[in-house]
Amino acid sequence: MTYGRRAGELHRLGRQARTLELLSRASALQAIPAPEIEQLSADRRRIVETVSRLSRASNFREQVLNGYGHRCAVTRLQLRLVDAAHILPVAAPGSSDHIVNGIALSATYHRAFDCGLIFLDDQYVMHFNADRETELHALHLDGALADFKASLGKIHLPADRREWPDARFIRRANRYRRIPAA
Image (cartoon, rainbow, N blue to C red):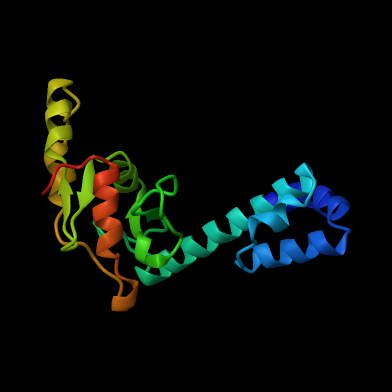
């Protein structure tokens, strides 16, 4: 979709061979050293960076959803409502777009995971954050909490053990989100 909206700009700015080569590398998920990007004009740099970011995101999503069989790791539902969530958020230092830093979650559990309402331990058990539960009770925003918590526990994992979440990402994510030790 992004390409379609920006095709004219891409082709107008991408006539130079160097820019086309960088766009090809970006879409092929190849790393482009910063000095190479810095040589481009601001418009071309933005386009190459956007193509690179979108290509990585698409590849990450595809790997995670395929690894988990398009099933939410918590509820095991498919229904084409599953997201690829980063365990260690993209904004955190050391985050990556590798499947071992990903987990397939339905939209509600994805949001709950991202805001620290639920968290994963390094034994692959999803927990509810007790501190956040206290906050929800105090604010009277705990309706149907028991139903939400009922799905938590040992998560569904990819068939290929090499695609399981890396415990280092899990621990770092919990520290990043200030999750109390489980």
